[in-house]
Every structure is written in structure tokens, then in C-alpha cells.
Image (tube, rainbow, N blue to C red):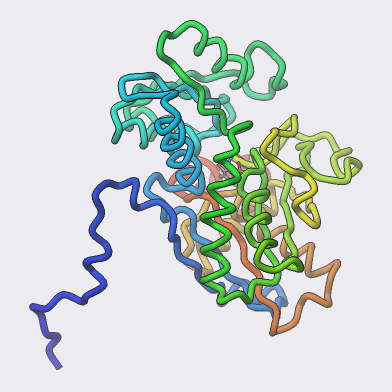
Length: 342
Ligand code: PMP
């Protein structure tokens, strides 16, 4: 039968926005269907697709909230310069807000982070200042030190500061967590979430635990980072290539007591599982998304009691494959790094 045209479905009216900033939040929650079966996981596993946000990552939520609050406080006004140290996604998110509201934007970005992120930042009109990879946070060359130096030099400039700004976890306490609660109809049992600044895991844990105290919150930290608790989990010193999770200091917005459990993951597993999320589930996610699967596998091994059909797991997929086309999305890069092919 021919499809009828003419009358648009009524919900399409809700898809009309005054600005692309309204296309942040309310991201889809999608069931994984193939991967859990091959991994022997009986529980229902859902992924929160944060790459559906306007700027392509979970960090859009915090940029919108930090900019709105700073405008309300009168600390910034259009024409000012927003400076931020970032592993890329917060930078992109702030550059997007800056583009639509008329701010100038400078992002400090370690050489470790992908060229794709730099290209998106520049396309949004931001200036990118690259800093050396692998330097400690207190070095004069770190992303944070350079951002502060620039802020002192540039008149009418301001650092929103995702590492200390309470709007970072608040965006997840009042946004991400509430969405998850309603999307799962209150059935969420386990949240698995990577930690960079720790804003996502801290805020989402706070929000969910207000609803139900016994939701198990699992934070994911790469080997080589120091965020995990207890501290002895961090003894292995390693370099890691996965972007956006892990740090060499504990940011103020991370409350290490909020997660119930920390799990360490390695690059190889993170990238392999990210590739499998793309290939087997059609989810065009980034490398830190793969780390949540790596953590899920470890969790199920150590807690087989959680692996039952009635349990509902949620993984946060923070960003998109688009950020890594020349990195783990590329077979030659994977082989060159010794991570193997699919
Ligand atoms: N994954 C990616 C790709 C990210 O860019 C970030 C943000 N640094 C995270 C995970 C972790 O988010 P958060 O800073 O809220 O801990």
C-alpha cells in the first residue's frame, strides 16, 4: 500500500528548536542485542548514546550548564574569551556554545589527543593551543597551566573550569541521571561509566542514588591513571592511548566515594570492544565507550550473581567514532599499535 503524505506526525513539532543548544540532553537509550550474547551476558544491557548531543559528546551537557550559569552570575558576557583545558570534547562543547552565543574561544589540548578534535574545534572558530603529551598536571606546559597563563594574559577572558565547576556534576545529577531513571522506568540496577574529570560518574551516581540507594555505580579508569579507589588499583604505571578518561590527579568535581566500585581497563580491550560496538551493534562510538564493555566483562566475571536476565545494566557511551577516524577506527593504526584487527 502507498504511504500517505500530507499530515506530519504530531511529534515532529517537538523536534523544532530555537537553537542547537536545545539539542543537548534527552539522548537515546538503546539495547545491545548481539555483543552481550557473544560475551555470555544474560542481563539486559542498554547504552546511553551521548554522541547524539549537538556537539557529539556527553560534555555538551556541562558546557551548556556552565555557560548558562556564568551568564546568569554576570561573570561572562558575549564578546569575552572562554578558555578551557580539555581532552577535546569539553573544548568542542564550549566552542559550540561560544559559536552560537558570540564568545571567542581558546582550547588547550594535549598532543595526545586526536587531530579530528582539533579540526572540529577550528571549524567551530576556536583557537587550539597544543601542549606536550605526558607532562604532569603541575608542569608549566600542562593543559591546565597553559590555560591559566593565557587567562592572565588575555583581557576579558574566563575559564569555566570543568575540573572544579559544580555545574559539571550537576548537569548529570539533574540531567543524565533523571533521564536514565525515566528511560529505564526505574529498573536500572547497574551503571557503568568512565571517569575523566569524574563529573559524569559523580553526578549520575548522586542523581540515581537519590531515586534508589542500591543502584550499583561502577567507575572505569584506564591502567596508568590514578583516579581509581582503593589507591593500590593504580600501582601499574602505563601510558594509555584511550582519550577522555583517566588523569594524573584527582579533579575536585570527582567524589571518589560516589562510585561503589572502580574497574581498571587496558587500551587493547577498550579499542577492540569499541570496534565491536560499531560492527556488531551499529553504535558509532569512541574508545572510552569500549572501556565500559571491558569493565562490564570484568564485573560479570567477578560478580556472576549480577548476570541474570532480570538485571538491567546501563553503559554511558560518551562520544563518537568521528573523533577517531585516523586512530582506532583505522585498521592500520590498530595493527601498528599492536592492538590487532577485528
Ligand atoms: N569519554 C570521553 C571520550 C570524554 O571526552 C570524557 C570527558 N573527559 C569522558 C569519557 C569522561 O567524562 P567526565 O569528564 O565527566 O568524567
